[in-house]
Length: 256
Image (cartoon, rainbow, N blue to C red; front, side, top):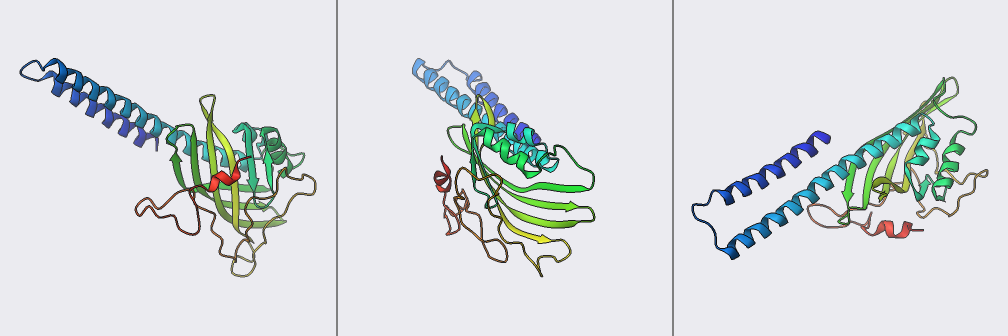
């Protein structure tokens, strides 16, 4: 993604340079009004190019941030995960309810493995983000990111599970840095490794008795074998149609 960002930024600069050279190569000086118009057009092109370069950098930063979150979760780096959130960030995962504010996010993350921080011998928790779709909003301060987690969980000589689902997350630029504003994780299938998804599926999780949420889940759903699809934040980019599974204003319902 980073090399593509640089390539496209370079292409924009080449176009601007070509425009300037064409203007300098005229055989006769342009009239004052024509010169002003040409300068105004060039200034607009520069502004547009800068905006596009910034958008491409934002996309690159957001893709990295989504992946970094997964790597930290893998290794029980709870404080590193919480530090990725905005001050009023929210985490809502797997029917556990919503936890509001960075301090509560930190509590939630530590609650995943009480008394344990960092990787543990005999424990596996791979948390991979796939099929990332990133949409930076025109204000350049908000972005919606959809991805698919593929989870491998296991404790040696105890149990092992597969898991898949979806993230529909909101990122915000706070103090000039992209941070997680609302992390909404859905799991659509969990199953024991020995049984596989053809024989047994784990139902949706409930709230932690030891850590009640600040708010009930915003979306009620059932996991596999139910055919639930996490709502899309985007319309079809070709047809412009928003199907019945999702709504582009979906995240409005997740504001505190």
